[in-house]
Image (tube, rainbow, N blue to C red; front, side):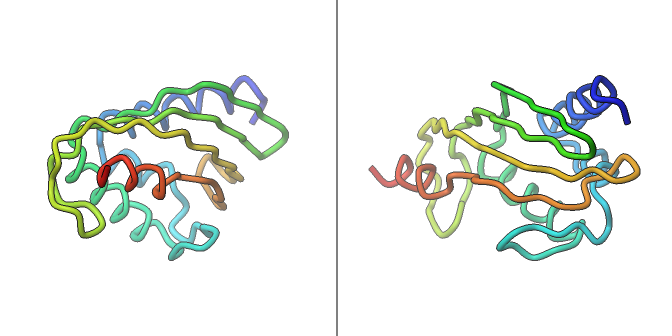
Length: 130
């Protein structure tokens, strides 16, 4: 894909995420996606997203910066939501959280083949337990 196509592709992916459309998200992820320090495969990816959406029904990402080079995307995002369901062993607090995320993707055939990044769950959990 050309850089402009990758940017549009990522905008579509982020839109699916912000709509919490798990089947649409799955369509963006290679079935055997590799994730640094996390279980691989699209099933694990979608399961993690489902857990997040159950805990934070209003969870949204906002793109801050996007860099595209060849088959790679680097994204700086802000993510936020209100804690309304159990998350990582913490009962709902009704607190609104806001965290930074940095993500690196390798996209092959229009699907995420590799991912690494910093979803700052330490900061998120800190905001829930203050």
